[in-house]
Image (cartoon, rainbow, N blue to C red):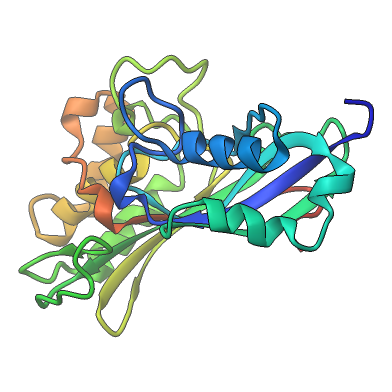
Length: 252
């Protein structure tokens, strides 16, 4: 269409009922439902491209995708209301922003941030949104180990096996544990992440926090480049994608 414009769409979703962002053959994904809603509203097939994958059950407080569509309809003040009405209750569109024709939600992202939530007392309101642990780990030791992780760039040891990526290198800008009212949160930011990487890092740091290994031993694990040397992947329920940064708006 001649009057097509490229848009970034910002959304948030509860990942409990979905097999991640990306369209799957025999499972429901966030991308599939968003494409369907946009196509229905615009009466024309719409394909979105997301800022990255999220695994099954992982939540997103901030997620961006891009798509091309007719300016006259999308910039109508009621379009956002219409798209939210077509989406299920656990997916919400926050805003739709016109961008340059070559803007790319995935390739232009310069920083991605995740949080992993852990609580220690049984709480029905945190079930599915945080991981319940019985024993409190040593947060100081875990932060010592997290600081060591930031010295490295090759994270093969934290990547899901047999993934088709050109490199396992990531530049981590932040990795820290923080105390909350309900428990603890691990916050991590990097230019990119490997599949399952954050959940594997959290599982490995918890081994340090439980006294199963010393913070310095994390060096041996990273330098081995072997996934089997690292800790288990923690459950998806506690993981949130929280921020995507771009060198231009939509992020202020």
